[in-house]
Length: 142
Image (cartoon, rainbow, N blue to C red; front, side):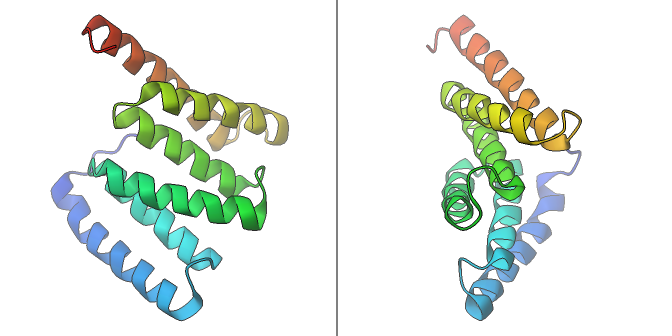
């Protein structure tokens, strides 16, 4: 979940991702799997740039489409839920992120192998949420 790319490294990726999403939506529609994949990639870049509001909006949109089209337990839906949980944790809402992460982990444990990256990522998001909530408490924010 961590990367050594700088904001300067991510800016060209951000521009390409925005263009790819716009083109995909124009050619195949916003709900097509290519468009949701493009939106998801853009949301990850935005999160890494700490542009949490736009990342959350995109991820929630993708999640709604994937839940409707693929179902709540589909791998791509789970990936979107994990990304949303991570965005919430990193944007200062660890309790919300932890709740989504915990619910997602239940599904991952029931439907995926324990060694799947999604299962490990979900656990890591929950751990990060606990750490962030603890730090907020220590700092007197909560």
